Each structure stands twice: as C-alpha cells, then as structure tokens.
Length: 93
Image 1 (cartoon, rainbow, N blue to C red):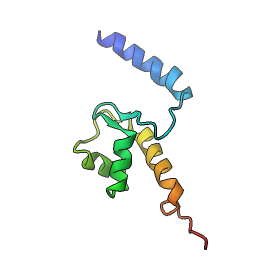
Image 2 (image 1 turned 120 degrees about the vertical axis):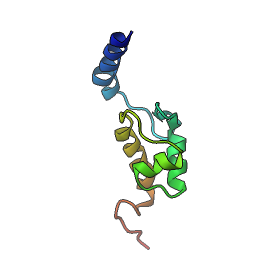
Image 3 (image 1 turned 60 degrees about the vertical axis):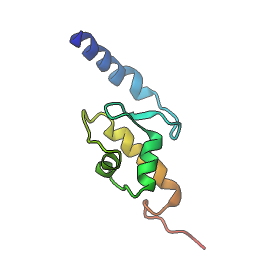
Image 4 (image 1 turned 90 degrees about the horizontal axis):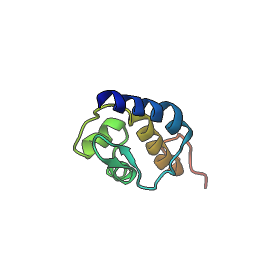
C-alpha cells in the first residue's frame, strides 16, 4: 500500500498539480496534514500573522510534511497584495 501511495503522490506532484491552479480565496485546503484551508490562513493574517510559522501557531499546529509551504506563501502574498503595505508600495493621495 505504501508504494502505491508514493507513486500516486509522485504522479500528482510532478504531472497533474504543477499545471493546475486553484482559485485563491475559494476555501481550498492549503495544508492537508493540519486541515488548514485558505480561510484559516486569511484569518491568521487578519489576526496579525506575517510569517508562515505564525500562521501555524495561530492555528494551533506545526508544519508536518512541508508540502504546503509554497502554496501557503502564495496565499499569504496574494492576500497581502491589495493593501500594498507588505509589498513596499505606498498609497498615493
């Protein structure tokens, strides 16, 4: 069973998932190990999280396998981008 799971994971991660993109903000799971979805990431950011470790801490967990980190970082950047504050942009009057 372990070998089959590893092979399916390899196929998903190398052939299917890299070409597929979920719409950001749709509540999709970011971290399967800890059941953290995009809404929970946004909630942690609203509660003051600015780093990945803070998102996990605010959700009462720690990273497990690490496969979620790149996607979680993308969700955080997309969530922060509209304000311009985290990207170094200034608001123009």
